[in-house]
Image (cartoon, rainbow over all chains, first blue to last red; front, top):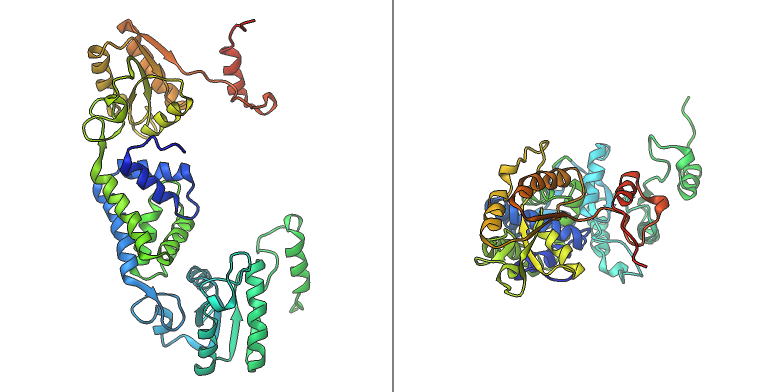
Length: 202
Length: 202
C-alpha cells in the first residue's frame, strides 16, 4: 500500500503488519483504532508488550512460558512426573489443560520438524527431553504434536528415538471430531478414524 | 478462554484481544509471537504505539490525521479548496488518493450516523464542515461516505443540510465493481448500477 500517511502512523502500520495474521488492511484498521482510543488504552497495550517481554521467560525444565525459573506446572508438586506430554508450543498446553484429562507434566519442543522452514531436530528441545527422561523417572511419553505433516514427522522421529529407552511412547488419537459428520470428514481423517477403531464396551 | 497463562502473558492477550478484528485465538497467537521474537522487535512495536499516540493529532481544519496543526493535504497549496470530499475516516482519504482522480481537499467526519451505535450528527465533525463551507469558498461537496446503511444515512442527512446553502452536492456512484460479473452482483448493487446508468459517448 502506498504510504500516504504521516511518519509515525506509517511506522505503526508497518510494525503492526509484521504480526502473524495481520495483513496490511488489518494493520491500518488497528492503527486507526489506536489513534482514536484514549491515550491510556494505547499506553496499556504498549506497556503490556514491554512487561511481557521483560517478565516472561521459558521454564528451565519444560520450556513452557514462565515467570521465574519454573512454570506453574513444573512448580505444582501434585502433577504426576511419570507421564510427560510433549507438545509443540506453550499454547498447546492450554488446549490439553482444557480437557481436564491430563494430570502429568509437559515438555514444550518449541516447534516441529519442518525441512521446508529449515527446522531440524537440533533446533527443538529434544536434548532436554532426553535429559528429563533420563533423570525424572518418566514412564510414559505422550506425543501430542499437531496431527499435520510437521507434527506427524516430529512424533515419528521422537517415537524412534524414545522407544529403545524402554519407556511407553504413545501418540494422541486422530479421528472424527466429536459432533462431526461422516459425510463431511476428509478421507485422511476418516481413514485414521477407521485405523484407530476400538472395541466397543458393551 | 480460561486464563491458564501466567500474569503478564494473560494481560498481553487481553490487551491484544481488545483490538478490532483480533479474536481470542489471534490475540493468543500474536502474544506468543511477541514472546518469541527478539526483544528489540517487540520493543519497536510498543514504541511505535506510544510514538504515534504522542505525535499524531487531528488536523485542525479537516480532521484527518496530522503531525502538527494541519495535515499534508491542508498544507498543500496546490489542492483545490473549492471541492471538498467528505469521508468518514482518515483511511478513506487513502482510498480516494489511490484513484489519482481527486485534486481537491478533504473533510473527515470521524464516523457515520448510526442510531444503533448511538452516533448522531452532533458526534460528527459536521459543525466544522459547515464552518468551512461558509469560510473557504467551497463550491462542491462530494459525499464519499461508505455505500452502506450508515454511510447512506449520513450522506442523505448532509445532502439535506447542504443543498439549501446553494453549493453543488454530489454523491459517489454505486454500481458494479470494474472487472465484476453481472451474474454475481447482488441485486441492490445491480439496481444501483441500473439507476445510475449513463449515456454512452459514441
